[in-house]
Length: 416
Image (cartoon, rainbow, N blue to C red):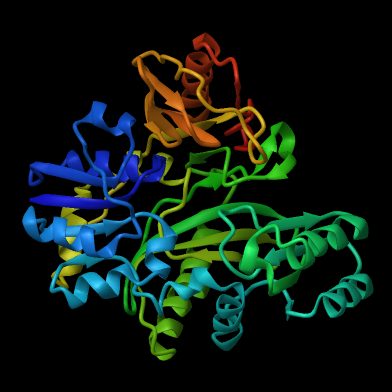
């Protein structure tokens, strides 16, 4: 088989690498990809992910068996619909189903209509009304831009001042453009967060192993929210009973609800969850693999990812098997991220005890250089989280990381 992956980050690198492991796959192309992927035998294609016509033409000319969509923006732009209209096989939700990520209010309504446990909320397009509501409710409280904001449109405000500042940035300063014209204000939920992803086709749900992401920029969950600074899997402090409850009370009702809505979901459904005293509750849904969770979940998949997706596309039962090993992945970010950050630093070299998934990189005149906020993920697998964590941090400590930063505590929340 020849497979096309759409996207250019670390998530797509991990997906492409896993698909290339399949004995059935002869070539994996990634559009637009990044130069770091080439080292793993992935062929990068210089076509932008929003150029649907060129992507369709490429898939036809190269006899691509099927296409996998990594990021959310092409999904919300209707790339699945366009490929299907062109008679091409593609794995991901169509434009209508991708709204589960594209609008926080859409997702909230789905949860309320289907009795899926989540935080109480209210949605606003009027700035003063939002301020009045937040002032009445008090802090801690959560402010979310309704639309896409690259994982940064959420403020967990511990003070009223912080909450009002977040509303101002989103609704009057337009920090996230049109995505912040509407905001969703949610009650603050206390508990341990975890990510539960699943392959979904209509009402059929096939869960993956769970992971825990770290959103704050700095150690001890301090600093601004980011797209994710690292992840690990498994998450031993989240009980199997909590996960089973989440599958039964969140993932399955969400899949059923999307069918009832007339927006059936096919693809990767990501549930960002929190384990509260009352059970698991939804923080957010995404319509695709998470980043950096993908880089620690897929290394634990022992069955053939290409076969799984082929089975889905043919309406056959997929087989999912998982390793008991632990995986830890740490993001190396450019100094200044998630705000204005440095670019052009040479990429560090790492030992062969770790796997590197490249994201914000470009080819310089002599070597690869940093070009994005989250530059790469350093990942390792071992028998325990502590052992995997040690391998990753040993590799990072020996690397030349001037101009970069990373968290030193990824995986430390896992109970010893």
